[in-house]
Length: 145
Image (cartoon, rainbow, N blue to C red; front, side, top):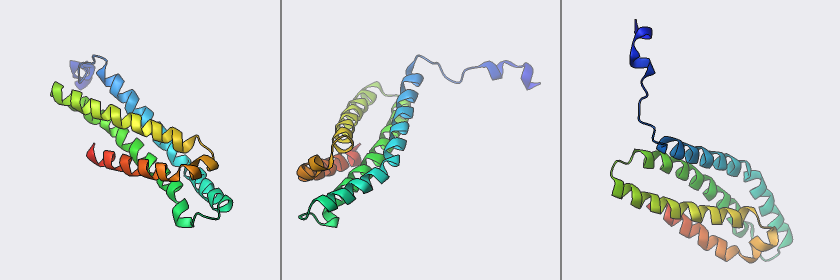
């Protein structure tokens, strides 16, 4: 009878705290991704306000706000899964290099998120070129992670 055997009480892996560390980060970035996803409507509203307030920006140029939010959603998704990947890396040196890049990527995403999500329309319009450049740089970093 399987209920009487020890197999159901055996922990499938040694928990040295690593699992919880990686799982919490996976979950946190997953939640941040959901929040970014919910802000798509805000991005569309910001884009509409940019078009209303500026006579020099076309609708295609104003799309940078929506593109930035879409990039944040993708980055959050990738970040969450990098923690799962890192958990299973066996080679210590490779894991250290990967975690270094992961940390760099995470810092760039957080900085970009604050700039795009926490600033008003005037700031976004004024810094449109810089935000577009950061979008391109973050996209390139994303493809290299």
